[in-house]
Length: 250
Ligand code: NAD
Ligand code: ZN
Image 1 (cartoon, rainbow, N blue to C red):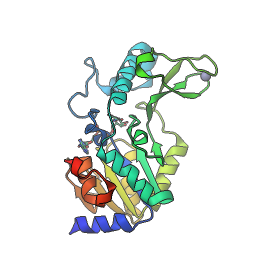
Image 2: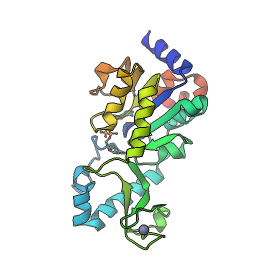
Image 3: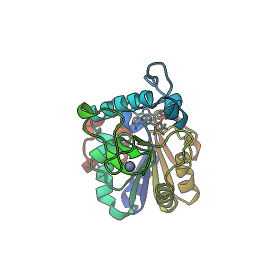
Image 4: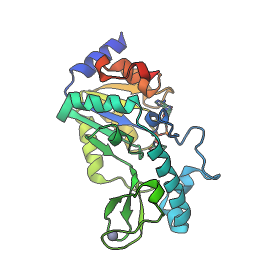
């Protein structure tokens, strides 16, 4: 069976690259953009998460980010986040987790070999000098934060629609997917580039490609195994029992 083959490959491979999207945090109660709750005061994310929106009305954009920051700090990592932290501990240097998420939940679940391709809701970046700093706790936080280095106004440390990804982070992600023996893509609609192409890169370089998503995506036809399942349930089927929390997964 394909699932057995996938388990065997995952277990025996030294080089594993993982890509996660908003779907993996849905089970922590953090809404995806494309599902219900994708609106905020009648605005679509695409109308707020842009440099133009921020230039026009920084207070409004900061209010939205402050609300999302509070929401993710109230959420807890779920078994899927924890299983990936466990997989990293099992694989060591050959492992990389690339995420499109900005919620910080992978780090809070214990993952360390993580590339946050789209930045993080938990940090701000100075508009003047580029310095990054963590936000104060949600209850102590009044946007906009000011830079501890130069006093300049800070913006959310996330990548907005129409902006470039950090070239170094992207190169690290691409290297991992190019050299992976197994690539695992979880909870992403695989339509936002260039992260969407990581699975394709891995596949054309000969990796075994596994997808976990309740819905089919553009990546599905390429995948060696596509599990129509939620993140925790799907990962629970792929990883050995000692990855923990299988019983919590459903
Ligand atoms: P998306 O909202 O476009 O797609 C979410 C995907 O998750 C869908 O394919 C859906 O079928 C799948 N999904 C839903 N429930 C799932 C579950 N329980 N388990 C597994 N998969 C599930 O998200 P995206 O493709 O990751 O990216 C859109 C952009 O939105 C990204 O740039 C990301 O930065 C941003 N975003 C991030 C967060 C977050 O950090 N948690 C939340 C919303 C949006
Ligand atoms: Zn500064």
